[in-house]
Image (cartoon, rainbow, N blue to C red; front, top):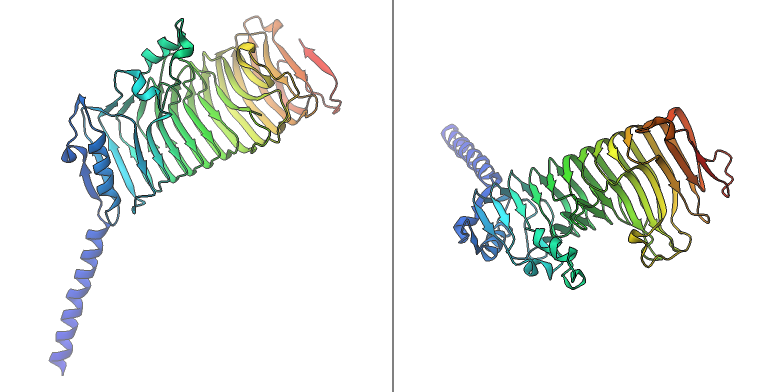
Length: 414
């Protein structure tokens, strides 16, 4: 009987080892390489089918999977990675090569998205590789005599209706339109990303976030021709920290009030930012028309402005190029916005501007330790219209906020 018990114990011991070994093996990442699926790293052969085959293999894998894009140049036509057909929520793209767009800008220009992830979960894009959309030719088309006949352009990297997303280390070059769009997503981290396009490239927002929650943008550098980060309706719990912008149009909430029924923007924090050679610094903008939208609970903290035309601005009569302006009062209610420890140089005399709605004045505006100067310090000004709030610490230029909550007063402080 003793020998039998010892035999059973020995069997159980080896069973335990086998089970642990099996668990360890199943926990290992299954690695795929796009070269195995026929991708040619010459920048001339369309690799779209190879990328999709690699994606399909990763989606069928039990446990985590990785897809490697090694060094080389990979021509990629518009492509969609669908989560609805994927059974894996732990897929990592390691991108060390350069993904390039077709030379003919119409190929991307006639669609909205170049690389599109829809309804995915647990996707990571990591590495030191590049997305090169070759947007210069389309920008030139738009600037020409027949610019209105050019295609609108395509966003380089888009995530829609997705969650638990990580984008890390990659570089986006010369996007036709927006570089990165996060739309209807939850729990997204964008970290150590670089974005580059010419300072005069049209509508090339660096990162656009809309109808999403729990998005974090960290340690990122953006040089582009439009907003460094643009924040659309329905954005909640957005955190931006250690970001360098410029040239750009700064960090912008809006434009809002594009429609009557619009979700609000709330709980947005921008911390430790450097904004250089930019049209605006930190901005909230809405069209002058009725809307149910709102902006609430925003903090701009520890921001350095270097040669910025409009360092701090709320603009509720937004109308670029003064074309087709609604000419009405904005319905967007802006409240509880704090500006703290913001310093630097303004390229215009009006360094702080709050141009708020007469029917929905800005309330709860806080200015704390602001030190922004025009080159002639004595001419530095602030401008307030329908703006109510409070100040603390040193505030330069002198605040013009209405402390008595009388909305009809318009004052310019010099």
